[in-house]
Image 1 (cartoon, rainbow, N blue to C red):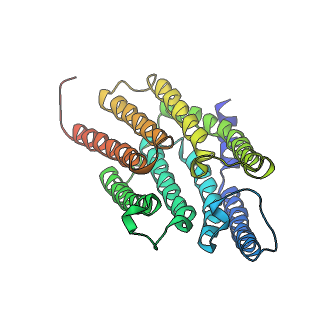
Image 2 (cartoon, rainbow, N blue to C red; image 1 turned 30 degrees about the horizontal axis):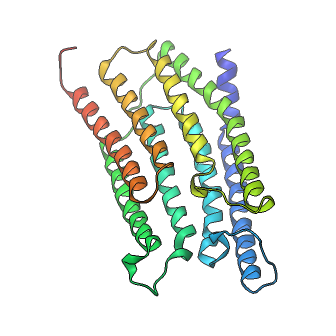
Length: 289
């Protein structure tokens, strides 16, 4: 059974499959960018008139939102691929995804910036500063996290570890159709709410990723429970639990606005960094318990 799981995982996430998926994502990102630009100019010069109100059709800079959306889907695919590796590798990928979401959000909000009024009197101008500052802080924290983590150790897995890895590969395989279904459903929800119903979707920046991170939290908890069968090391269990708390803080940021959202993201990554630093220290010294 486990050999079949390993074979199926190696097929789905083979180098050839990754290259093909990357190629299609690049084509979709490029095509989406061009189409988005075309719609912006057609809307701007009155050739078409959209009845729904969306900042994504106000400025050419907003067209960058579309390719970043496809890139984020690819990053989500890679996160699933890295899931059978250590908790540390997976959580780094989560941090990278949240940083890309922040960058994408800026492209959407640029048209809302108003330079004709005192800069700090406009909430959209202030929000732009929050997001830019947030990106710098998050990028720096990710750098510190990677430095603290260091290079992954190459160890020869025994039979128990191989079984644990195979179980995580099985979870990754299950997540692939879930990811695709979630992406299609999120796109349909946006089209139905924004275009067909002439409404608007709240928190468009976090559409898809709200549910995706919720699923990740549940998966992380499930993997943590499985890991109890293979390790009794207190430091490792606390580290893995701490990373789950870090992911929960990232998930909470989706429901927040303004500086609170940025603070939750930075706090989540900082918490993970501190947990990792303490874990690394405990691994180097002898202690009771």
